[in-house]
Amino acid sequence: MPATPDELIDAWEAAWSGRDPEAFAPLCSGDLHYEDPLCGEPLSGAGQLSAHIANLWQAFPDLRIESTGPRLLDVPGEDERFLAAPCRMLATHRGEVGGVPASGRFLVLGIVFYCELEHGRLHRVRGFFDLYDAAMQLGLLPRRGTLGERALLILRGFGLRSSSS
Image 1 (cartoon, helix red, strand yellow):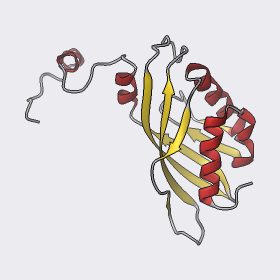
Image 2 (tube, one colour; image 1 turned 120 degrees about the horizontal axis):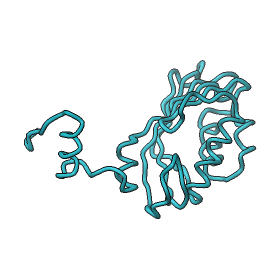
Image 3 (spheres, rainbow, N blue to C red; image 1 turned 45 degrees about the horizontal axis):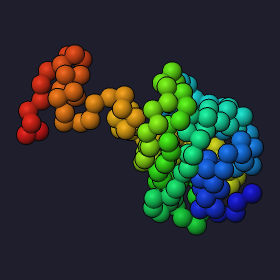
């Protein structure tokens, strides 16, 4: 088991990239609570987390997670209970996910994992990323500032935005 929060998050990122669903269990508390924008509801335990990530591996077989900066601890060297870990996911969309067929497009997605630690393990983890940006990269939604985006906003009832805003 990793000894420091940095080692724990290094192992977390390696587990995401490593294609071994069993790699998450030693990193997580028995009652892990996990959420990200792709989860319909919060996941409980390493088993549900592993199943969720295995589905992502099928859709994105080359998925990998990389650190993008220093991790932020609530009180370094003391309790070290809360941790934010900025990273990015890089992957090619090669399989169906959430009813969306493979696009073959490459995706680069900034993610921040906000974690609560308990006895040196991940107890609560919430992954934050821009789902609209992911949908744009996969060709599902129009790019920001385009005529397509304006049309979508009109259909949604938001009207037109000024180009200066």
